Length: 361
Ligand SMILES: [Zn+2]
Ligand SMILES: [Zn+2]
Ligand SMILES: [Zn+2]
Ligand SMILES: [Zn+2]
Ligand SMILES: [Zn+2]
Image (cartoon, rainbow, N blue to C red; front, side, top):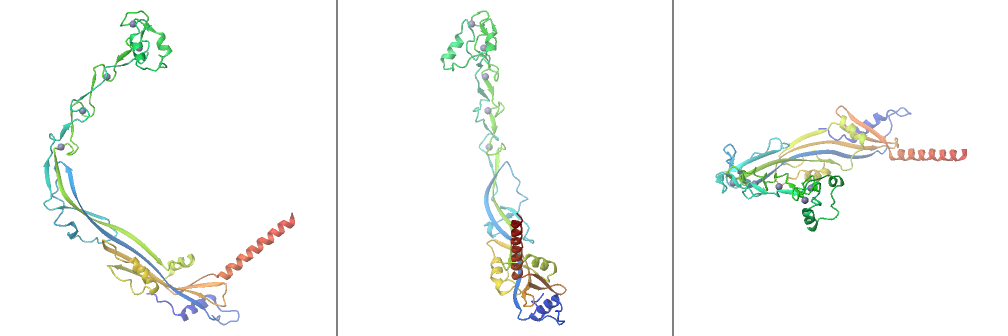
């Protein structure tokens, strides 16, 4: 495991990075400001177990002989936690001696059709209003059908189509020549297309048999009931990076690539390992609290010490130093002083440009 480098080593790495000063000697790192921290990344995968019990009823005879059994409360049944907490698992069991088969009260899986009440047919009007004359002035000679229909409240706007009215044939009722509608021969109605004038149609719901499958037994005539216990293992994961205020991205990228991280895989329910710095322990402890129903876990934890170093001879830079796999690594970033100076310069340049442009106008 990489220990936090002592101050001497930190400063040596920084001064090596800076190189010799113009005066020849190695630069004097006067009153350096060093802020040390530890980067900790922790992820946990938990397996949470839930147990439920319910009554089941299935249609027909169900063969339950291959299913595992349990006795007493499902919560007491011994089930091993999953070897890998990331696996999702579901185990269904049958309570011993709870299985029973019942013959249904229906007639071997059939009941009377609820739509036709067992008749197998539905009533249907044997005739329909004539589509050509709409029953209005079906015959200009006798006209009975037409008048009666109009009196029954047919809207007066329901006029026959002009083309249909023009072609008239001999009336089948009164024998009047060229008086009757060609579509209905003066009757005002035509035989119903649905029942072909029979006055009833077969029931589609039961195909005319008057019987349908009983929904309660699915047409099987019997049901099987039992008590089912279920044990579920559901994985869930969480991550935590500390400190919450993270190092700047270029530093993180270099730490990822070159850092001599200390990594550990923890199983079982334990305290955070000793290498976790005291300021991070409460956060890691909260993450690792055992959850309700948690039966297995895998914790991946890694840590790396990091030092932020400022030296008086390099006011424009901030150095980040951490142990690498081969040597102590140094990354520098512009200091706030340098950033603000560059911003001021940029604003100055912009101001000059504005002045120049306005003078040229
Ligand atoms: Zn039934
Ligand atoms: Zn029916
Ligand atoms: Zn009909
Ligand atoms: Zn007529
Ligand atoms: Zn007609």
